[in-house]
Image (cartoon, rainbow, N blue to C red; front, side, top):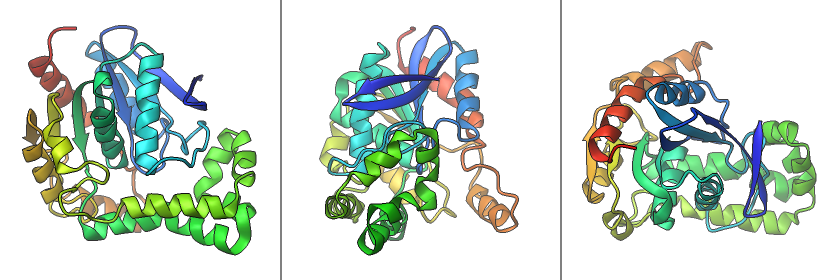
Amino acid sequence: MASATVNGLTVGYEVIGERGRPWVLTPGGRDGRDTPGLRELASALAERGHRVLIWDRPNTGESDVCFTGASESAMQADVLAGLLAHLGMAPAVIAGGSGGSRVSLLAAARHREVAAALAVWWISGGVFGLLSIANHYCGGSIRAAWEGGMEAVAALPEWAEVLERNPGNRQRLLEMSPDEFIATLECWMAAYCPREGEPVPGLPDAEARSLGVPALVFRSGASDVHHRRETSEHLAKLLPDARLVEPPWGDGEWHERQAARTAGTAPGLFVRWPLLAPILHEWAADVLPAS
């Protein structure tokens, strides 16, 4: 697999498709580019004539770990902008879901030159949703560092993949001061705290209103407590050139996935993403000049 050095970090990536309009896809959570559904969506877009970047964000997959910046999403957005420029794929259609939607939004807002258009779905929002993911991403690592130092952090299951796929990441963790690590993750945790006029962490309403690229926003389902419907609807109203559409999986998809997970038969979180390909392709053809 290919890698590039961006902002001093080794970043793993892959480009699917040899020519056509550049796209980049970013999953959520701390999932890397091999998460089920992501590569399939990239391949489906490539079959329609696009060139698609999938990548491991810092702290995912085979990329380096990194604990700098006001938030993890902002740090990853800056790396994404650098990676697109490094690969000569800017401006690109920047697309992602859940945590990947947040990274995509911040990349487009902080680095306007790399964004030709923006497509997002499963946008995290709501008091419960945001505070839940703050604790999910940061709480366990903070407690481990507090109680057992960086050796305890390195032993956590949530970091197992990045340590296995990039052995140098273990030493990077162990070299950090526990106090510095805790301070960074508490800062990242605070970034998720709901704020008036900032439904998407790190993206104030005023910045969203000034984001001058075509945008496609998939409405979240009413059953999804972590990716609230009103967050997607509010964002679509803020973005000056946005189109709000229904997702291809229907409103009950979140409940179906939760039930399957309880039964031990849950597919990967992103396994239905290939269903987005025709919608994304037709929208891009409609709002962007021919590549």
